[in-house]
Amino acid sequence: MLANYTWSKAQDDEGPAVKGWASLLTNSWEITGIDIWQNGFRFTVYSGVDNSFSGVGSDRPHGKLVNQYFDTALLTTNAIGTDGNAPRNVLANSGLFNIDIGVIKYFPINERMQVQFRSVRSSSTYSIM
Image 1 (cartoon, one colour):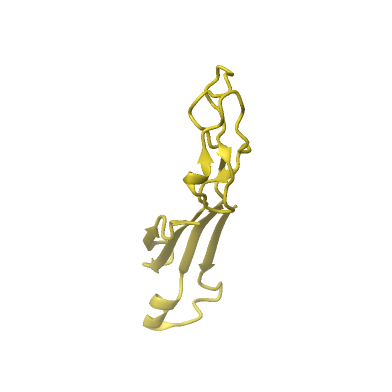
Image 2 (spheres, rainbow, N blue to C red):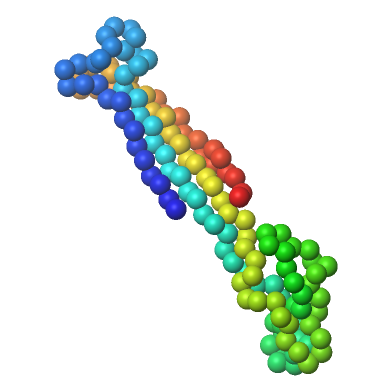
C-alpha cells in the first residue's frame, strides 16, 4: 500500500490567526509524506540437485516447514528418482514499512514574496516486518 499526503496550515484570507512575531512560528506550515507498506514476495526453495532425473536441476527439497521461520535441518535433498514434496512459493521475504516525510515552513517577506525552509527525511522508519 502506498499513501501520499500533504497537510497545510496556511494563513487565512482574512490574515494570520496569530499576529505579531508569534505568527512567524505558528503560521504557514506544511507537512508532506509518502508511506509504503509492502508484504514480502513469495519464493520457492530449491535443493540444487537433479535427483528426479528431469534434466532441469531445480528439484524442490523433501521436508516440512515451520509457519513463519524455518529450520534448514528440516529440508533434505529429495530421494533419487523422486520429486521433493516442498510446495512452490512456500516462503515469503520480509515485508517493508517506510516513511518519507517533509516539513516545510514559509516565511513571508512581503505580499508577493516568501522564503521557504524545508527539511526532508527519507526512509525515516525503514523497518522490516
